[in-house]
Image: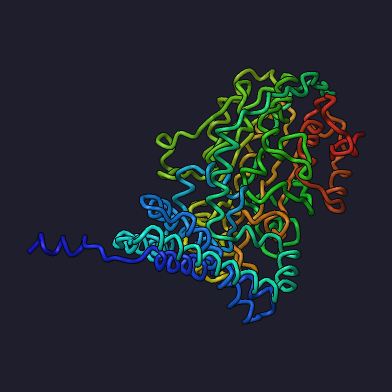
Length: 544
């Protein structure tokens, strides 16, 4: 009986290759590309004709593509992984409005295991099973019948021609509609599923099969201007993660999301734009000497950045990592890298991540080692990284409730999502306050200062968009406007000859961006080099 049941389970049923091509094409066109079709429908002001025509056009295009791939031992081999990966991208596109362009694929490849698992939830698993695993099982049950080679080729040729004619006729009648839609919304082509396959191949080729650029040394002329009080400098640079300006109390948000640093003298730059909408782009960009408009990651990671130039000026630079990687910002051996040991900090860590305050435990060993040296400690926070926002702060730091305490945030109310996100902002404020308090313990020996800049923002369901990584050209302000804080002791401002009042006026009135960070970091620290442009150094405008 067991043998009989197994044989039935494994039994295949015959299906002509041309019928299978049509079925699979309809599945990719009408189902897996539904988010794209739905977006076209919305842009066209709910034009039902375009909704139907879009289904036909996309499905017809897939008929042409799959007809060219319909060869024995090839068709299933290509289709199986394509369906599985497309089911995952379909879930992300449908639920979060995520687009899998090259930058998103780059971000995926450079995501650590813990971060990747944060996207695993009941909804994502069910979508994978329903739209990926089950269709693949059905495909495996099919015994493809190719029939007579000549007749099969003839029929497939007729199928190809008919699809081309169909596409030609529909585009002729609807050309103006589609030309207008795609001309004004060029990002739509990035929504095509499976565009991720093309961009994955592109990423692998660029990063593993292409000869890298020759490394370029910058700022070797760097020198450190002595402070007027002859004390060494101790600066902490906090790189925030996924914090958006709109939820910062200092920047006009009505909620008290900065209760811990309130009254500490934080200078908050009200209008700061990021270089990208994902860490893989923003992090190397913000530390490079390039502007967002001419940024090239290939160049950025094969040349010295602001941290390297600080080391040339004799600054002892440490990078403490709590967000899965420095994206080659701290790649050079002259920068000391510190990874958090989770097993030794189990009170603040779990198997996937640690609370950001754990990094402060590394400070004493760094600061107390040769107090005559100038130092910079960079802390890369996990901050407000979603969708598991609730894992970014200890329970005793919960302020706003009810909070969304699971990763499938699309099933939470907007109120719950905003509450849990705001709790991460409050906790980051706590970490900043604790850092400043710790710095003050060393002000007898050092001139002390702190910079905090987030890498990009986050969408919390506005206009149906969640998380981050939307192509910059269409990204909402929630993903591109970020907080930038500056703090220093009165003695620091005096010793460096910088007016805090002037900086406060710039923070309130001027628009800045990540373009300014490279130059401002060097200027605020007191480093002179030909690489620093005064026009982009915020502190250069406030010299006493």
